[in-house]
Image 1: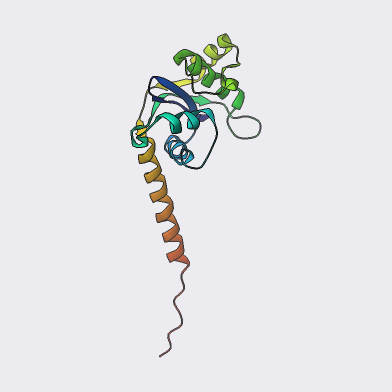
Image 2: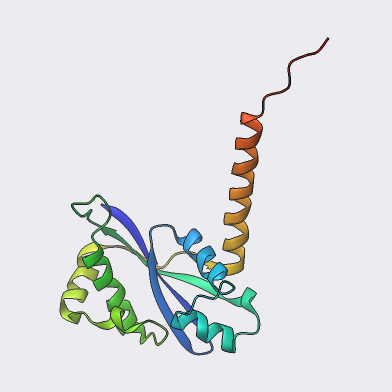
Length: 155
């Protein structure tokens, strides 16, 4: 089983629902995508209408314990259906059409069967980006230092 977080990003009366095994990293990715030219509906909308990106936050809606698929990752069919459950439940209008094409009764059954907890942390996208990038820079510096070999003593 694998823990998967379902989250929302809300802005100006509009909602996006997504999922991730790594909530903070995913919020960081959303922040980075605001600046890299990604053309998905969410980012186009935010670029056109959001003046202050630092106010955008992701909210944990629920955490699910989803079974692994035969490939070792979590079962994407179940995860897609649960995400669709939340998209429909919240009437999320910033999601693509593919997240709404599921049998809602089956999605509700999956929601109840695999639900681990409701609610959880809220993290602003910019803060997540700073946290993830700081960890990356620190890890890189530690790796560089550990691989550094001082020149032989010339005395």
